[in-house]
Image 1: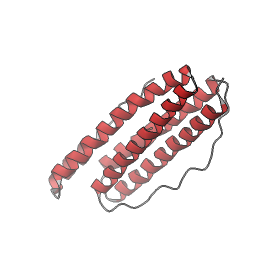
Image 2: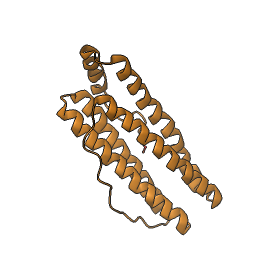
Image 3: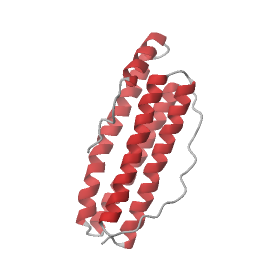
Image 4: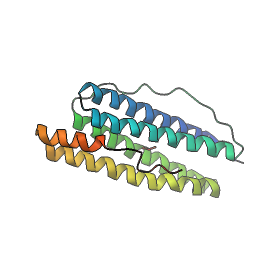
Length: 169
Ligand code: FEO
């Protein structure tokens, strides 16, 4: 059984993961409008992955005989100044989420909720991967600079993503 404080915190994170999904979908739409369909595709899969994160929490709350309470999803940004601005915003967003996950782990330890702690360890590892992946794209975009050919190649590379790299059955 989840403590009320743990349940509230998990519901808050559930909302944050849906918020991430919505933000990345908004980024995908912006990239699509820039005719960067490979990057848009990559970001769309990123949105799917965030939905998966939310549903993991959804299932965990139920497995612990808790109550899922959905709340309003924040309206995401719709405009960015450049492609690198999009991916830098994505990296900053992931760093913020990492902080939230760390706070959840702190709470689980404080509540002596070992099951929640074990569950959250998957998210701890996931955040390391997510930050590293987005950081590598930001680095490549910096290298590409104003070079249209390099940008086109990166768009093609990101368009090859077939599934979320961290998705587990
Ligand atoms: Fe669910 Fe990208 O963190």
